[in-house]
Image (cartoon, rainbow, N blue to C red):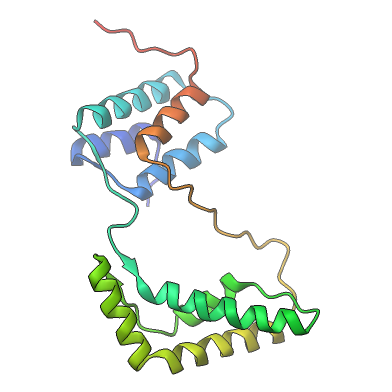
Length: 183
């Protein structure tokens, strides 16, 4: 993949009419890593903000669906980890254990609360034993491995802010005195 710039991302968003979560994350990454943004980058962010406000570009929500398996695995992992941590000096990483199990279980996607309830019931009836088994295997492997490498970096936590506020904040932080002149 070619190196993405703010200008290229904004151009793509304007062309497509959509700003995806990946595009949004890349703009944020560029801004976070830049000591100073160029006038072109400020102008591109301003164009993006305007297009988002007018509706010419729509922000694609981060999730329009959920994987019910994630909540089921997390619930199982948290309960299992809490039990182990309560009876020993061991500290476990719930995220690592849940990721291990999720990679070995079928996804259960839903787009509505009703669909999620159906998937939860399906999992309870057909998959609960398999979920517990995969979480247990994840814990065993976690306990058997050497301590984590210091260079490991956990994935960032999403704040859930809406895209308009994020772009607006980016503009305020990186271009507090910039205003595009109107003709």
